[in-house]
Image (tube, rainbow, N blue to C red):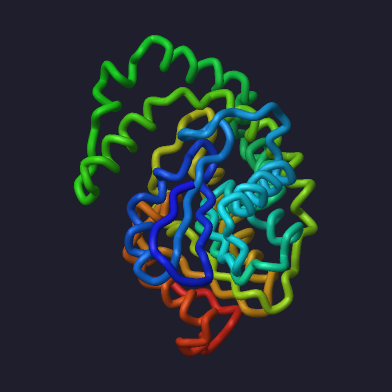
Length: 300
């Protein structure tokens, strides 16, 4: 776990599938100007050792609860999760609600998204996604032969970050995490079953960020995932509806569509995260006015 800043509530950052604490390196320094912010590596990712399966939402939420206890983070927390991380945080908020002061979903996955998208793919003639073991085998082959390092991916840097953070990020991108990804991927449906009935959370403040549908539709998908423009449109409509449905988790929720952003909003639109999340924290503290209309969806 890597914590920066000071203040309460503490923002706890949960990464997406296959990602770790380094994935938040762009926005964490700015968010930590407002309050304490902690990012961590799940088992088998980043610098955390692996744990045996199943790696489902219940187990991952219990891991996080134990980690926060060991780190003596006992005060209120705001859970902020990207993609698959959003499902894990829903589990955490249901199992350990006593200190949860708010939730931020960053283009969050939803419990039964695979079960809902597979029939759409089939109806539109799309090729179903291959089994998880296929991707695991291919990733292991790529990393074992040293291809990413040969291509310079283990020393590639991105402007805007200090040299140490960029060295960590580059080396982290060349770590073999196939087994951890496979374990979480194989448990996706199980995690969905564990979290589909989570919530509603009453008046718990919830902020939802969703990607721009226009950007997603312009993206070139792998042929194995999408076979036609019509299928891409159907899948995007389904994703957008499930993002809209996240607002039902609380009477104090609002959704922002991040204009110009694809799935990784914290990388595509860090300015939006850095503006809205500190405001969200101040609203929880009672030091900023509450949103005029809860339940609204805006595009920024």
